[in-house]
Length: 357
Image 1 (spheres, one colour):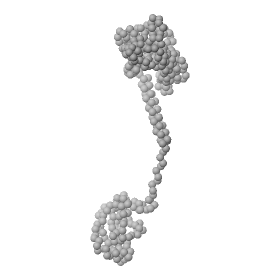
Image 2 (cartoon, one colour):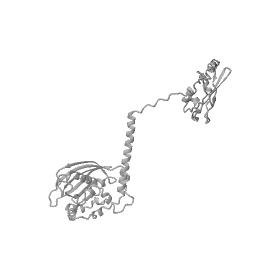
Image 3 (cartoon, one colour):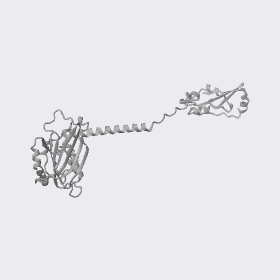
Image 4 (cartoon, rainbow, N blue to C red):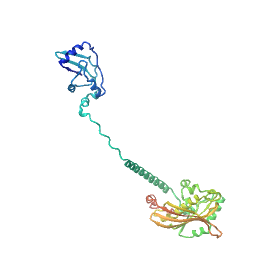
């Protein structure tokens, strides 16, 4: 758009002397920002100074046409100065606001930083919550998969074992016909089983005692277990091979502790509300070396039950057949606690099969 610029009569003589030396030229410039627009509104060569009050009457419009030549006209005591500006449309209506002093405000100060203690507390709370949710979810998933797997009854597990060789058959015959085993088998308060064989094959292969430690020269045959129906006591007859030793010819102490942990837990399970528990504490005292290729018996007794907690004591001793006194090899005391989620995970079905215990 053409913008008129008025000059006073005092500047007419100066403009008249300088007009001939000014060559006409086309002045085209796009102003990308209001700051450049303000600089472009500076006085022309014909007018060294221009009152700032006249800037408010300037209007700028965007146009796609090429601007006309620089033109200057003198009439009386007034000099008319015309210029054309090409202004981007995005800045055409923001010029007045950018020049106005009311809009030149300083930005608000940034908010003060949060204290380190509050940030630490927030991150810690999130981490603890995420860990707890993940632990509960994984535990629930594992327990659900275990309980959903089909398991055979205790009576079926006794007849499920098939010896793989002559040595296993000999060991199995010795354990089944031992006088101690025969005495417990005749007691109606005890129930005979082979718990390792109750596991489904997929779970048994991933079990430490039922899979990894079972087989020739290890736990040659699955232990024969006689457990009290109310969880008061338990006896487990087993044979320890030569491939589970620490020192040559001596059974590894960790193997004995593992057998005690499993045997003492199985003893108190019937006394717990939902028949399951996890180890909270296990104290083991070794009394004598346990020799490889020997028959042993694990004996356990539940000493106290309080709600979801059960305290059990037990030992592993030799299993002589010729009337000799047994030798205590290792003793242990343990505390088992039933998980809180067991009330949901281990609730029996309304009509379980009669053979499943």
